[in-house]
Length: 140
Image (tube, rainbow, N blue to C red; front, top):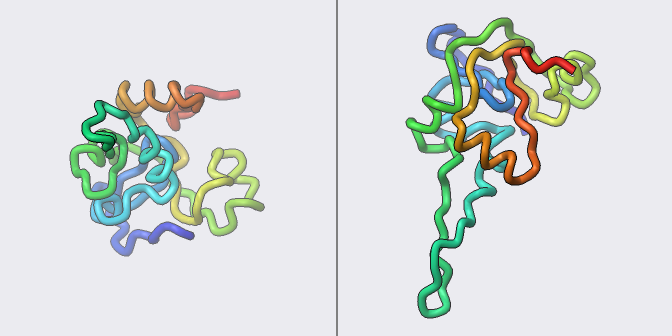
């Protein structure tokens, strides 16, 4: 699987995911979500809020970006520096350096300004996933 390379490279309209730093147009995020994070972001989603006649009432969806303009606004940003084209993520030293070697092929920001919302960070933490901001302040 690979991400769509934005056809119109208008820097001000492109957005970078705050979680993985992939760059896409808002329309691509709305249509497909984030190709790296959408599956991860769908997992929360079985918060069982009650049982009625043997059925589970589940709350699906608060983390996913697909078809959610509000979630796209808070989980992506137009403020990013540099662009990396990752063709073969598994063998690329740049992808390893950027922590994108397990992600799909595509265009990635070198540095992304901003943080994911607190509710998303808390959800990731509750599942044992450490959030590392993509602004290069968390160097190790």
